[in-house]
Image (cartoon, rainbow, N blue to C red):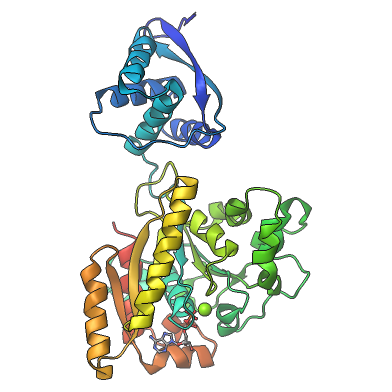
Length: 394
Ligand SMILES: Nc1ncnc2c1ncn2[C@@H]1O[C@H](COP(=O)(O)OP(=O)(O)O)[C@@H](O)[C@H]1O
Ligand SMILES: [Mg+2]
C-alpha cells in the first residue's frame, strides 16, 4: 500500500502504540509543525542507528496506530527488530520515545510541577512550598538589580494538598468545608462538579506578587482522600493530574504542599511530578525538605523506596530536583554539622539550599503574611530564592 505523498512513495505502517505516546506524538508534531509520519520516520531512523541498549517501554494495552513511511524503511525496521529480539510494537514505541526526547517541548510550553514532599511532619514542607512559590512569582524588579538573577515574574499556583490546611491558614484563609467542591471532588468526581477549580483559587496579596500568585485552599474532605482512592473506579494514580490539568494553561508553575504521609493521595502527587513524554528531565519533580538530624535520614530512605516503587509500577521517571536542609542551626553541634555534610555528600539529589532556623518564618506565620512580603531581605527569603533558581535552571 502506498500513499502519493511528496518526497516519494510511502508505505503504510500498521502497528500499535500506547495511547499516551500517540497523544504526545500528535501534540509535539503539531507544535513543531511537522507531519506525524515524518516524526515517526525520523524516530525509526534514530532507533536504527542507536547502538545503546534502550529501556523497555510499557506497551501493555497499546492501541492501533498507523502511519506512512518512506519506501523500504518499514522492511528495514522490521528486520532490525528481529535482529534485536524485540517486537515491532516495542521497537516502534522506543522509536517514538527517542523522537520525543530529541524534540523536547520548549520549557515555556509546559507548566512545571514542583511537589514539596516528605512523610515526616514538621520538616518544613509548608514553609518551603510557600517560600518557593513566592520566590517564583515575585517581581524581579522588587529585588533590585544585583539580586534579580533571572527568577520571578511567573504565574504560580500553590496547592494546599494537606488536609491539615496549615498553608491555607498561614496565609489568612480558611479551608474548604466538608462536602463542598474542592480539589477532592475534582479528583474523585470531576464530571459532577459545577465550578471550575480555577474559581476556587484565591489571589495572595502583596504588591511584589502582582496578582500572579494564587492558592487552591485545603479541603477538609482530603482527610478521607486515601480511603476514597482505594475504592475509586478509575486510574487513581492520575487523579490529581486529572483535577489540575485544566488549571495548567493559567499558570507557569504549580507547587504542591504535600501531607505528611505515604498513602494513595501521595502516590497521585508523585505521579503528577513525573517527567512527561514531551518534557526535558528536571523540568518538574520533587523538592524534599529535610532536617540535619538522623531521623530525617531514615524518613528520606522510606520516601526513596516509595518513589522507586511508583516509578517501577508505572514505568515513569520521577525527578528529585533537590533537598532543602531546613531549620539548620550549627549551634546544635556535631549532629547538625555532620548531618549537613551527609546530605551534601549524597551529590544526587543535590542540596538546593540550607535554611537557618531563625525567627522570621515563625513571625510571618503568626502575622499570616507571605514570608517574602513580610521580610523580603531576611536570610530565609534569600534561601527561598536560591531554591527557586535551583529548580528553574536557565
Ligand atoms: N527555617 C525555619 N526557621 C524557623 N522556623 C521554621 C523554619 N521552617 C519551618 N519553621 C516552622 O516549623 C514548623 C514546621 O514547619 P512546616 O513548614 O509546617 O513543616 P511541615 O509542613 O513539613 O509539617 C512551623 O511552625 C514553621 O513555621
Ligand atoms: Mg505542612
